[in-house]
Image (cartoon, rainbow, N blue to C red; front, side):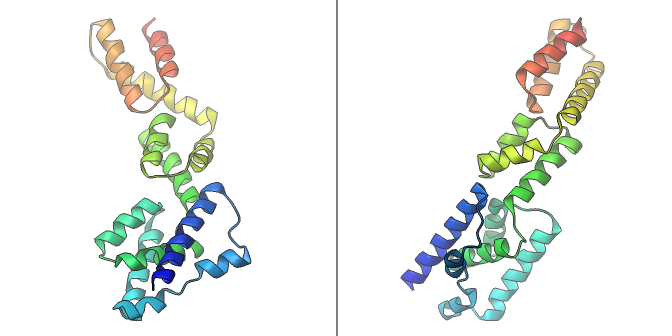
Length: 199
């Protein structure tokens, strides 16, 4: 049992590492290691039907919208999935393409920029908070075109400048700058734009 638990944890960690580094994970030896049957764990107290129930709920959770590994860890805890099954289920979801952190990061970045108008700094911080690798974060940010990013920044900068009714110019510049920085835009972009709008 100890050996099986070790293999389960090792396989999951190795799979996560390969995904973050964009390695191919179809090596024969590696595939043999990660195909640890979760139903073998039924001897630990849960029936195959119960394990299958957890699997179906997690599949539905991933199909509803893109998820990251941290989302799944939280969801499994909420569902009271026994700790000893969690790595096996995570491997299953990755192997069957229900869970893909690069796909999640790209969707997250584009959505937060286009809908909430976040800048790259805030997007990057939020993805790091979810333990997404630097390589994947960079890939996700590259999916936002420079033209789109610039247009959105200029539009919301102009909008917040027009909506801020502060008569004191210094205070108005301060309020607008703070708003754009909270949105996650680069400080030099913010400084240059506020100078332009206030001139």
